[in-house]
Image 1 (spheres, rainbow, N blue to C red):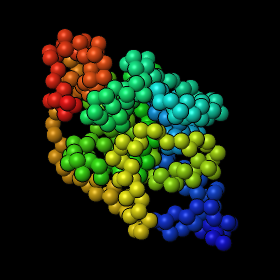
Image 2: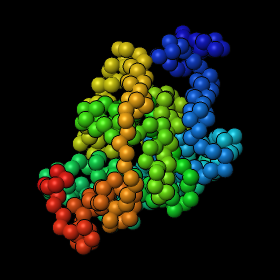
Image 3: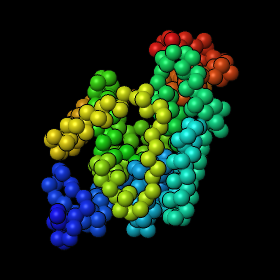
Image 4: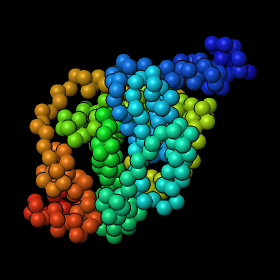
Length: 328
């Protein structure tokens, strides 16, 4: 029987990159210590701030909400959750149920914004339109852009100083690999433990307190702390490039423990040494939100999916040629 290297009791978790076993109590302490160390070392929050936690109902976001709620007094912050209802039948309702259950247990306020409320259509309706158009753009791409819009807008309207997300080590490594495969240098340079995109006042700065914590450890922590997360996957994951990348990264990690940390170290080195393109903050000509282009991706996708909104956009920016954006 494996024993905890701290106290000698029966071990519950094996931390492969350390080569050590830990019991439930000492693993939870180790996990929480790493969360607090990341928050303090990188100055992710300041005392007196209002922190919004982006919560999907999955294990990572619920863990982030739980941790900020647990240590809110110690960190001197006020915490609330922001969720997005994309309108995915047979999926989102289960996640929101788990979220509301944990929020009630913690006594934390949850604000929910929906695609239907913001854009006039659900993701299911958007996917139907995308299918009719031949899937020139993947559902995950549209969902990601629209989710970020709703999340930022809802957090900003609620007076958030920071927007914390549940991105963990695995997420960061997978995104880095995908950006490298796509030669998306800007994406690599932009995304760190603190968002580099908060130069405009309307963008709530995003922070990632689980940035250095592996996905398996997050799962173990949810089991130890009784954070219930329904095991249901988004039905549109089959369209994502991320799925095979995730499988490959995990295979390499299993054969070479510490691989994910080495990849993250390469990413951080690239971010620190590369020359970041200087770009003046600008705004979308249609919605007025911060954007690096005259027409933000949110408005582009809305126009692509909704003929009525397309007319609104074209009144302000002229005739849209979707082929220019690779959508036709």
